[in-house]
Structure formats: structure tokens, C-alpha cells
Amino acid sequence: MTNAAREAATDARPVDYIGIDMAKARFEWGVHGARSTQGASNDATGFEALLADLHDRRVGLIVIEATGGLEHALASLLLQLGLPVAVVNPRAAREFARSMGHLAKTDAIDALALAHYAHTLAHKANQAGVRLHPVPEHLEALQVMVLRRKQLMDMRTAELNRRGGAMRVLRKSIDAVIKTLNEQIAALDKDIGAHLEEHFKDLDQRFERIEGIGPTTCASVIAFMPELGQISSARAAKLAGLAPLNNDSGNSRGKRSIWGGRKVVRCALYMATLSAVRFNPVIKTFYQRLLAAGKPKKAAMTACSHKLLRILNAMARSGKPWNAELHGVTA
Image 1 (tube, rainbow, N blue to C red):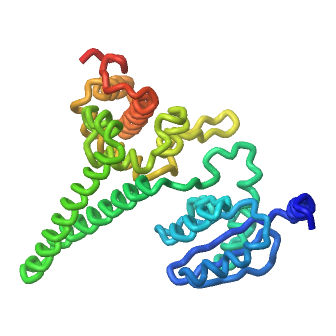
Image 2 (image 1 turned 30 degrees about the horizontal axis):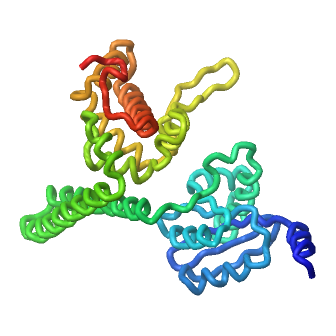
Image 3 (image 1 turned 180 degrees about the vertical axis):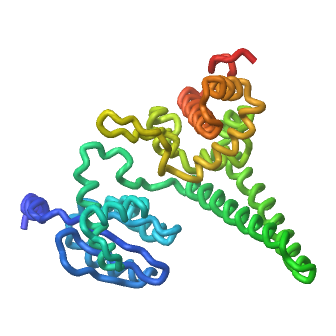
């Protein structure tokens, strides 16, 4: 068979859309339009079984439900092999499944629902943000360090809460755990700082000159908003979950609210905003103007986080340092 004939035969194959439901020990995958699914162990052996099934398929899109990081190894492998992959929010996937009549929930049902979701996403007119793109190794390393730091912080908070109501006989044990966690957090902060210095020095230094932005916020934003400087501010706000969403019907105008997006970025910006509304001349003035106009404090804080993100996006795009006058306030 000639090369042209092979290409024609390849083009003649139907396009398959794959849904993968991940669990700790196993994963289940299904093909849109099929009635049955297949399963395998969530390890190298299982990955080989999936790849063997995909080998002769013309894959349009593979949708994997985000499952607390359990999907990471498989998604990375599929991307390395050049396959189109989308990692989707579990809530969005479940709402889609219900809208399609998948009211019951099993691994097999979820896999087929995700395959249907893959077909729908692949046919969206606007493909922005649908497919996952390979992450450079140095960026991936920063992401895992930032997430690990959050895990340690959550564990420390849990231990501090336990200590408050613990009997004296338990406090020695709890204090020992807290001490270990403090040491681990301090060591990780040092590693994150060194990594930023090596790979993101210019951007990190410019961001940290903004009053209210500290090392933790810088690391979180750089790690989980690598698109900054390459996208519009409106797109950045949507990715971070800081864009107010309409809730209108007919002549009724509902209350706008934020939803979804990258929680790590949104939380980091909120913590930065708590400081910025006190010490940053731009954000402080903006915040006070919103309150004077009758905005609730929570809505004003969200708007300030949104503005802070817009400033970061503009600085990443222009390469210019922080300048209060540039953003409308004379310091």
C-alpha cells in the first residue's frame, strides 16, 4: 500500500471520542457511541492496556475528569504521545451527565458520559481552553511544590485546631507534629524561592514589588497562570474564576457571582488583596471608592482581586515594573 493510500485509509476511519473515569486503584474508559467500557489498573500496566486500545483509533479528544491529581500521570503520558487531552472539572462533568439523562452513577456510566462530553467539547465553536497543553518541566516542578505547600499548610491548620480542644496528654504529640510541619514548610519555601530565582527571576521580582503581593502569591500565580501576558484580562479573569457571571432571565437581572476557575490562583489573590486594600495605593483607593458607592465588602474584595489580576497580566505583557501612577494613582 502506498503512503497516499495509507493516509486515505487513515482519514476514512471514524473519529473516536474517549472518556476516562479515574480512581485510585483503577480507571474505566469508554468510547462515545459504544455501550460497554473497559477497565484497567491505574499504573503502567493499565496505561499500556489503554494505549493498545487507542492504537488503531483516530482519536478526536480524550476527556479525563480531574480527580485530586490521580489523573496527572495518565494525562501527561497521553500528551507526550501527542494525543488530544482535556482534563475537566468534576462538577461540570457531572452536570453534563445529568443533562444527558445519566442520573445513576457508576464508573462505567461516568466513563460513557465523559466520552459524550468529549464529543461535545470537540465540536465547540470556540476551542479556547478545551485541550490540555504539555507543561514545561520547570513549570510542573513549581506547580507540585506550590500544591505540596498548600497540603502542609492545611495539615498544620488541622493540627492547630486539634490542639485547641485537646487534653494536655495529647498536646506534646500535636506540638511535635506542628514543629515538623513548620520545618517542612520552611524548607519548601526555600526550595520554591530558589526555583523562582532560577527559572522566573524577572517576573517574580516585578510581581513582588507590588504592595500586597508576597512570595507565596507570586509562586501560586506564576505556577498556575502561565498564560499571563499572553491573554486578555477578561480571559485571565475567567481562568482564575474572578469574572462576574450573569444570572439573567427575560426582564429579570439576577445577582452576578463568580464560579469555577483555578482555585489556587483565586485564593492566593484573595489573600494578597487582604493586604493590598490596606497598603497598596491603587487597590486601597479602588476599594474605598467601591465601598463609598455602596458595594458590599465581599463584592468589593472580589473586584479588587480582579483588578490585581489585571495589573499582573498587564505587567507580564509589557515587561514593565510596578508603577502606581501608571494605574491611575499618584503615590
